[in-house]
Image (cartoon, rainbow over the protein chains, first blue to last red):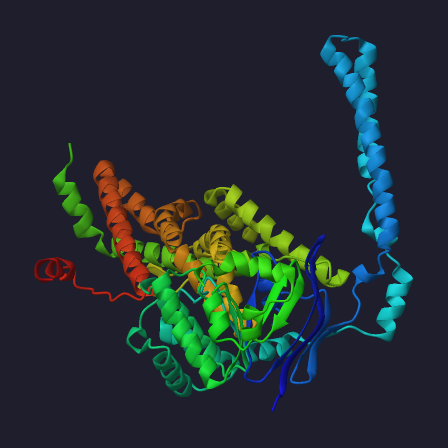
Length: 337
Length: 262
């Protein structure tokens, strides 16, 4: 029995020139616990945020239980002629260096003491020329094939769901954050009930009952009337997990849930997460806890520089890594093993 | 120097006027602050509007115009004295053919509620709204983006997020400044006497000039304002505590008792 809950194909996310996610494909089956590991800045968190559309992906296909909720096959960036663009950039660099050199020659003359009117005039002219060159910097838009892009868009209209559908989508894929993000103006109980009454339209009594049940599960039943600032980090994170559980999510996304906690609190949060994994919940966990990835997760993904370098089930991944990059990372990370 | 006979006289002969003055000052400042805060929230959201290049040009221009109007409103109303605003309002209304003097109520109630009182109420409300817009805007921008993300990740709409999560925190964080605005309003409502708003200062001016008790009159006036502002500050502290989810007690000795036995 392997029902596919979430399918990701060729997902990419660019922040202007910064290409955070380049090409990521992944299938998540029901009951999977997937651990995503990798160095900082490799795009793990961005990937997770793209899944529930907190961050808008640049291109890719995302589908939930077979129904696509985000589908852009090709983005504007795919229609930029990069070979020509880079050629133009190279030529431009040469021109820029030339302009800089000529400017430097006359500036040096002045510095050396030849402070004639003629030299000052030349420096002014060179500065003007230099600025002109700066303005001519080739831009991507010049190499963008607009007609081809529009033709493609007409044939394959990009699909993005409406804001309302997005919200129901998000309530099925709740997220637990590194910095907790509990609502500071409400106590733990209200934190758990507010989204239930607003999004799932449950009655107050029903929501309260459910919240108490989930708070008991994470062992926070005696701190229900405390505000987040009166709780310790581990307690906050457990309330955040309870808040996510209240929404009956199909998938729970964990974005480095233990990174802001001290070792003692890490364990209390990991205990709760183990419990959830044993219940058979589908979870995607971005983590730096190698022990958790090894023992609890059934699939491990190693990400680096916007790509999935290696993925596999946790035993074989840690015992027999294939790629050199993975080996290097594990060697550095596994000092305690 | 201070003639205590005159002091007694002021209290003995003019209770009705003084009390009506105090009541109208309280109503002016509290109503002005609360309604001004309400308007200010809208203006703050207007000032915070951000346009995206993905919007169509019609929507973009519309939103920019709204933002500009809100900015201009807060700049103009904060950049001119309330006294001048009141006079402009008075003569502007006169030019449009509206004389606030014509609005009268029969009986004692007209001591507080009369035409110029309502004119003053309008001026102080719209003046406060400009300050409140600035206060609320900085409060809104001060709320951590993580709060918004937390709410959005649970599937809450952006309107629900701002109403249940962001706005309460923004108001709570700027409550000391809002309270400051209330105290300023209690004192600054006195400038509305230029349009004959019958508030406390206006009443005392009349009383003291009728009885030639200027020093005594204004000393008493200062004392009354001091008591009012102290009361306002105390009530605001209670509201702050309440919003923080702490237990509040109206018994002034409660703290003392707790100190002794706990």
